[in-house]
Length: 193
Image (tube, rainbow, N blue to C red; front, side):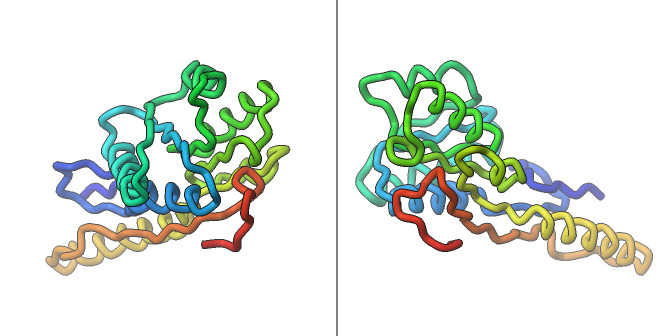
């Protein structure tokens, strides 16, 4: 039996340990809106990747719920510099990964853009690098340690059930997320959501 961790394939019939990625997109966007940002861009990863599309759906739904429209791009490229130097520059980015968020932070600094006053950045993952950058990066904490523990427990439960001639009924476990506010979105600093 296969266990997917932090990935979701539409036609996959095995076991999954995941976050609710549409919730990630929705909560991230709602948080940025609450902080006062309005012209938000979602920088995704690979077009067609299920969890990327789910986050994008949550992003668009949160904006629609506030009668706003957003823009989204997949991957990381020159699009960030182009966006930040355009007449319609975003005032915030929500990114698929913390790495992308840190790259945007670097580009913003090189352009003299003040983070968080002129630009908010919210990454996903809550990697350790988010706390040691010059401007600390706000992040969605995917609760990766809990995800790993659940995957290990699931593996041993599957083995145990197989030895007893049984099959586990539960095929999916959704791990809760939280937003960790830091300096990169500190227009209104709030506690962990």
